[in-house]
Amino acid sequence: MSSSAETGTKRVGEAGRWGDDVRSDVHVWIEPRERGGIDIVLESRVKAYYGDTIRRQAENVLEQLGVHHAQVLMHDEGALPFVISARIEAAVKRAGLAQGKRALPDQLPLPEPTPRDRLRRSCLYLPGNQPKYFINAALDAPDGIILDLDDSVHSAEKDAARLLVRNSLRAVSFLPCERMVRINQLPLGLEDLEEIVPECPDLILIPRVKAPNQVLEASQRIEEIKARHGVSRTIWLMPILESALGIENAFKIASASAQIAGLTISLEDYTADLGVAKTAVGNESLFARQRIVNSARAAGVAAIDSVFGDVDDLEGLRVWALNLRALGFEGMGCVHALQIPVIHQAFQPTQEEINQALRIVTGFQEAQQKGLGVTTLGSKMIDPSIVRRALKLIERAQAMGLVSTSVPRSSLL
Image (tube, rainbow, N blue to C red):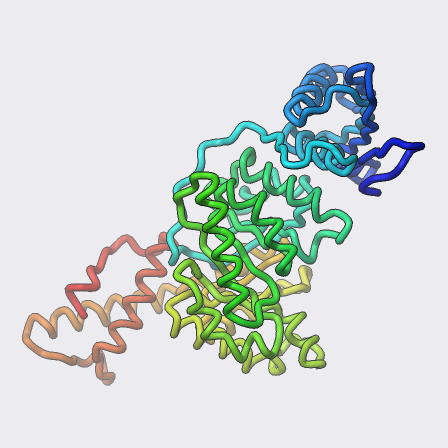
């Protein structure tokens, strides 16, 4: 869709998509006029049922944007109100009007803020300019939903996508999923922040980070926007390392801000930067992934891996995710709902691992009661470092709902 055009001496704007292969979207074309009020021509398969409602909403949005005279053409493909509002606003702004104004949908109650150390086994990417994916994404129960403004959005649609993502943060329930947004590479990403931060996403991913100053720039802008809009809740950050230089600076980046909750990598971009092919085995990226894990652990944040791009190869995904867990990763990105249960299963401790961890903790408790610093379990010595590892496994199992037993860490170490 073209963003704007000149008709005679008048500038027109359009936004959104329509057609046989489009769902949950609306295409809006607007031509401002000097007089004559608002004239809306609507095409919709549900016009007989919802036509008047769509028209009233369109008139209300235009009123909020200060547009009083215009010809408007709308091709509706089942768009919900938050989509209609975003598409009208994008079209109006592409026509050169309503600069500095917003037409915000009603806001749902904000979910509770997410903790820094929450589960992030699966982070599902959704293209930020395709609302059909937003509505039911939470039903597939990923730990996090990433509304993507970066690679999945064409350069000509960045402005419209950020309005759509902004509105979805206000009007769509993502249930218990962490609400994440991947902004564009800085400096364009700073424009994304202006729209996104006031709507209180839980976490923002910063792409193509090569040095800590990029994180600091984004963090400073976020705090400025929060102050202007009276936002007090924490918004976590997750830098994405996509280059050899980024990997070399991994620890400095991971420790650049107290708001960083995790560190992740884009393997496609990283291997492209190296000039090597990305393989299913992953030997070419093993150093980088180990560096991510070590740097994240040293900085006290989570290590999250890239996406597994072959949606049809679920067995390959299972093997990859099991290897990630063995390396120390806590989760990974995903691009399809079918990948979510496979990822969750791979990052889940086995029952035998849980039982062994509980035996270690119980044995160490008994040893401490006897005044001993170490004990044995079978033929193996159990010391505090082994107990710490067992406690971490139990804590993750508790977060996954696999263990109901509560073990106070302070009573052991």
